[in-house]
Amino acid sequence: MKSTARSLAGYPVAALTVAVITFVGYRWLHFNATTVALAFLLGVLGISAFYGLRRAIFMSLLATLAFNYYFLPPIRTLTIADPQNWIALFAFLVTAVTASELSARARRGQRTAVERSQELERLYSFSQLLLSSDNAAELLNLIPRYIVESFDVRSAAIALSSRADVYRSGPDIDGLGSQDLQLVTLRGEPRFETTGQLAFMPLRIGMRVVGSMGVSASRLSRQTLEAIGSLVAIAFERASAFEKLSRAEAARESEQLRSILLDSVTHEFRTPLTAIKASVTSLLGAGKHSAEEEHELLTIINEESDRLNRLIGEAAEMAQLDANKVEFRFQSAPIRPAIDEALDELKQLLVQHPMDVRIPADLPPAHMDSAHIKEVLVHLLENAAKYSPAGAPIRITAEAKDTNKNSILTVSVADRGPGIDDFEQSLVFEKFYRGRNQRVQISGTGMGLAICKAIVEAHGGKLGLTSQLGHGSVFYFSLPLG
Image: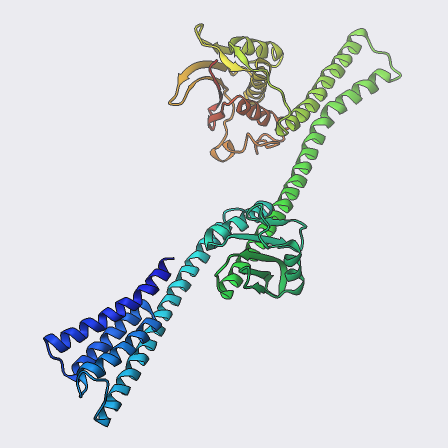
């Protein structure tokens, strides 16, 4: 609308320019023919630069008439007496029209250069948007909307030969039918419909066509549409390759995890099974056993069966925690009963370690599942007992702290074990990881701390440790106050 109004305004402006130059040159400054001709040429160039070729030609014709009538003898007539004036008048007209054409060409070239520069900027921004996601399905849903937003088209659609769905920028088909898109994919050639301003482009990776793209109400050049199609195809191939790599990596990690689990569980299961088998074989032997011997063998069977059952329970619980299938019953409860229950459960294991429990009487309750927090304490105390030498004390402390965000309860279990070096401190909470120096000396599956971490994080807390080689370790976890 603005361009139309500007084009129409060019004609009166051209006429006014001729009138002003004629008035100044004829009435006021009394220009000679050469001077006024140059003035008219400058005016024609100005009109051509601002309003285009048609307005400049219109002004050239008006200027020719004014030049003849007011400045070529005989003055104030359209008659030309001297034949040389015919040549001058014709030269002026040709010069004015030629200058107008050259000015218009320069103007069109400048406009084209600006449009190409803008399209390049849009293509760069579009390519950056395509890097925002590595999920192929998510990217396909986003690409049509990106095209509409980046290139000022009414609607866009994407179809791929490997997928049945058509991905659109909106609910309206807007002339971009699935059959048209499929046809372009099969033929591998672009198609344009000027009536509906529709454009269909194949999506190519080299010589291979992977799909098609359609846009409506588009004024983009063919080169820009081809560039968009290439960027879309490359982005989809990149996202697909990333997904395949992720699946392969996940499969590799799963296989590695399964191998580690099998190795760890097999090693740990073999010990209690061997003890149970030996005890049963001894009981079934031909020789007679005293009541005391039978009781000892049955005690071994009972203890190793409990150990075997616990190993199976830990593996099952780790799987449930990973799958978020464990139900927690949160309530406001004091931490001291959970500590006492954990100590009572491990009293046989802790008999060789003096216990130093420092729990303030006025400690506020925490928001927690007491049964699962007791399990965390059992794992931490069991590790402290296994890795500390006989007679070494184990200390349990708890305190309430106010942080910038909230109030928390921190519980710590300190031992006098060999300590953990800095490298392994970030690994001990991973599933099945066990210290390099304790893998053979001390039995275990490497699941205890991983279970503790999952439980504490489900409470909204954090499990951590501080350690110094040769001086022991302190494992601590935080819980929100109730």
